[in-house]
Image (cartoon, rainbow, N blue to C red; front, side, top):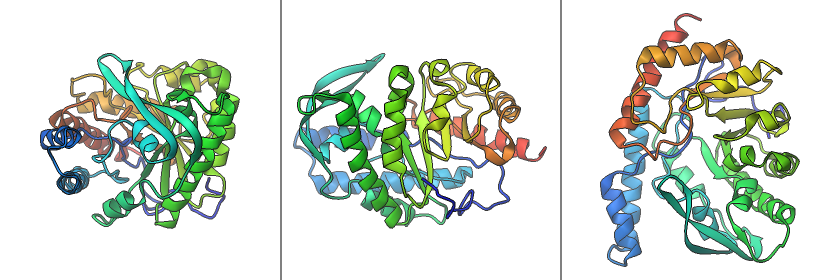
Amino acid sequence: MNDGAVTANPALGEELLLPLSTIGSFPKPERLTKARAGFSRGEVPEDELRRIEREETVACIRMQEGLGLDLLVDGEMYRGDMTAYFAENLEGFRISGLVRSYGNRYYRKPVVTGPIRWSRPVTVEWFRFAQAQTGKPVKAILTGPYTMMDWSFDDHYGSREALAMALAEVIHQEAAALVEAGARYVQIDEPAVSVRPDEIELAIRAMATVTGGLKARTITHICYGDFPAIYPRLLDLPVDQFTLELSNSDLGLLSLFKTSPFTKELGAGVLDVHTHAIEPVDVVKERITAALAVVPASRLYVNPDCGLKTRSPEQAEAKLRNMVEATREVRRTL
């Protein structure tokens, strides 16, 4: 976690208000989806898949630059599921069959079969590649230890706490390697935290292990859960910023934050990623303005509710275009 050695908004400029960013994932273009399916069937060689992943990563970054986002992401073109990807690259896991997550979405649930170990960087080369494509800062994104634990079967540790803390140690190693490679923003995604309020203390301890000593701005993304049950204790997660879903719940979280001050930076979700509808600029402006009534502009970022991978490329770009325009209009009023 930032211990004071890193100033607010490093590389974004101290004067920039309402920095624009996204949560992490972008829609995968059809050519990439076909290549990944072909690779899994043994019909597409790995080199060819990696070439397409790199090309689509560059295209994703160019699109974000063109729209005017401030803090970029790599779009996760090289990842499948957010837990399986890391499980495939850490020692101690195997991958099971498909498990339903929500709606018609499925993922291959990891199985812990032995001690979890970090033997090599997992995302560092992709971070370096993405950062080399742009002069704007790129946010490094990891799946957090609590979510990795909660979304995996455990055949080894026999204790949710022991597994979560073991994962925290290896995810800290990955985060430290990213910071060493130049990452100034590290986001640790923890969507499972909000659905198991009875384990918020464990989630806080695990996050403390991940962010301890990191010389970077730290962020966590949490969405779609029982926030009233964990607020304001949620704010004790040792990170600098929370990126939260607001729009899908009709800004209900903002009412919750009025019951106890929101003391961290807030990345306000102003786009509902679970609807095809493209929110008009005026609607997005209203959401930003509502967030400003709870968190001052000096601590407010603007982003979608969650990752954009569930939308088509056209929908994602149109939603972001309106988010950028709305933010610029609000900035002119500050």
